[in-house]
View 1: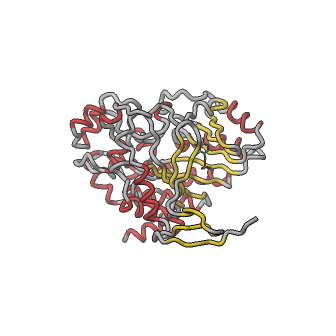
View 2: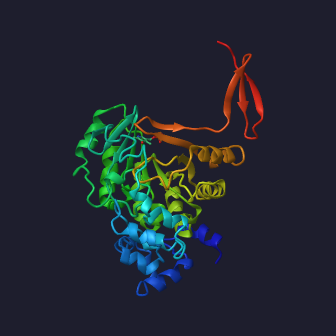
View 3: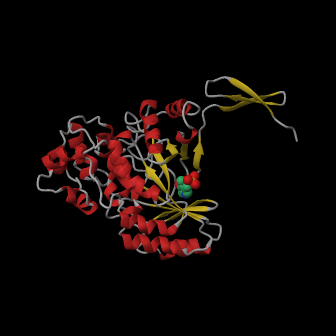
Length: 387
Ligand SMILES: *Cc1c(COP(=O)(O)O)cnc(C)c1O
């Protein structure tokens, strides 16, 4: 069967289908594991790579990686599935760089902080960040399936995360504030919650009359796609209108398995958007971002945000100049489907919220005309009506 045939079958399959490409990796490193076990998200979570010894069994680690893995400043975990997408020899492999620590994590540059977006200051009750007038960020768990080394919330993630023991206060806050019409459920990764817990959480939020729109932020469809079971999707679709923002980094993540997970979510009517962080040497060029955006669209995911990397402590080796982001956006806008163009934003340090940076657009005024620059850098004039 060809890849396209599998993709067409994807959403209809009762069970999770594993790309035969993964078989070699599984047989080599997990010789006693069946495809069935491999395709079980619980097996994947139980067998995450967390220590130097476990990583060394699979990867040829550089001296730098070995040193950094000893005592990472925040938790380290990679699912065997996600590890199988990484190059075992090349420490510059893009996915490997996003998940295996290097010494850069220990170097703190000027302007970097544990909580640069001042989320703590905007935290109204434990777990609820209320920064914008009509919507809140609700942090429901401190755990993820895998840990991205550039995590914006590294200060509070991991098994020992200091989060509210119950959601009661948070849900009461939302219920008592009729201006909140949109709740962004995030963390950690909300899809790490057991089905029953997620179900009751969404049910309680949906029961609040003024909450019109629910969304979940997750990377699980790309790092643990087998978690997107038919059962999970059946729960999610009860709470429409529901959107999901998928954290996507690189085209290598858009596998057959990811396609199945995303197809199931899209077939269930969940609006899919993406969030991508620009990362130096990983995805900071048009040749990587363009196929990523196109690949997301092919998976029915609308590219939503392209983020400038937050100045989190030890993020210097990940951050790119703002000019890089501007030129990537300039290379997309007009050159490809508008649907494939995300908003390039900086989440303002200090808590100012997301600020979009657009390429081209309005560049001045002249005698009742607005001067506009198009994607080919030509100037056009629009007669602006005077009041
Ligand atoms: C990003 C974010 C939101 C959602 O912003 P949108 O632009 O609506 O996607 C809400 N609250 C906080 C604190 C955020 O950081």
